[in-house]
Figure (cartoon, rainbow, N blue to C red):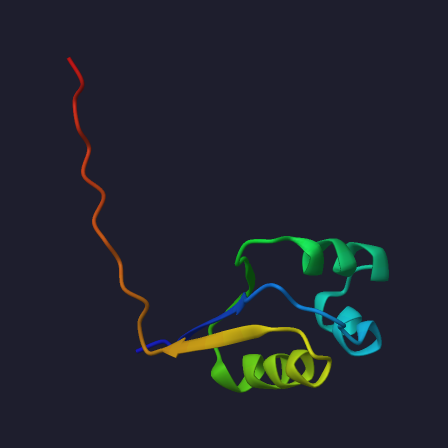
Length: 86
């Protein structure tokens, strides 16, 4: 059974240490600042291995980025229902 991981932003972020956050995103400092200024929760990272995602989450936390991580053996799926509109 595969494992799935999400790291989701939890704004407002306040004073982020961009020297820590920028390497996680592999974006420029300005791009990371734009992500940090976004006012709604946003999925920042998706991965399968918790061991890979935990260091990223820890680094973001050290950089004072407000976010949370979800680790699940399986993320829930909802079957899509197709509807016909007359």
